[in-house]
Image (tube, rainbow, N blue to C red; front, side, top):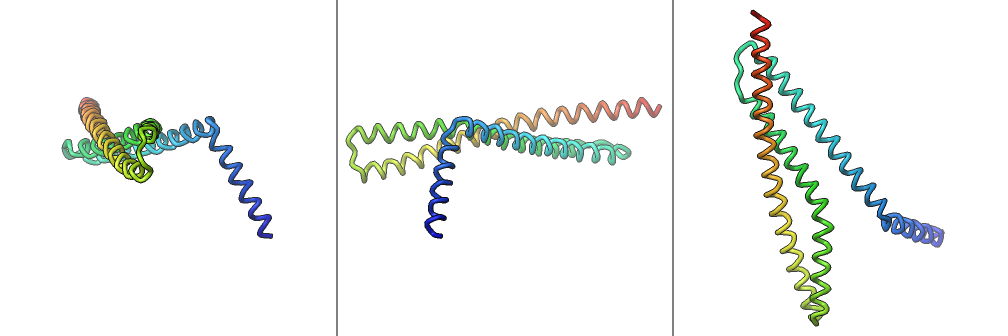
Length: 171
């Protein structure tokens, strides 16, 4: 019984390795993750805009203030900033891994002892990780700020047009 389970485990691990070594599997995973991220961001965009519309319509009788547009634009900016960081990470990760492997191979060919190579690899991993995170955060902040500003101006101009149309229709 244990022999059969071990054989099934070996067969399933070999099957898993064969599937994961195919390029089309990685392309499928990449496209699937992007589709899920886009679906989530689209649903988030629709819910934020729905909240904004309901807030504007509830406050249209009183007076318009820019606070709902500011809240909505900040939420949209954060969402698209995070989405851009995830997209950049998925592109940067393979390139970073290739760079890391190349440097370790070059250090090995330079005649470094194994113990020094392990220490250099740990330092290198930490340096590369810090560098990638710093760039991702900077890039995500730029995208978030840009999306927030554009969303704010879009929301304010669209609400002003709606208020003007509402005032024109009332008279």
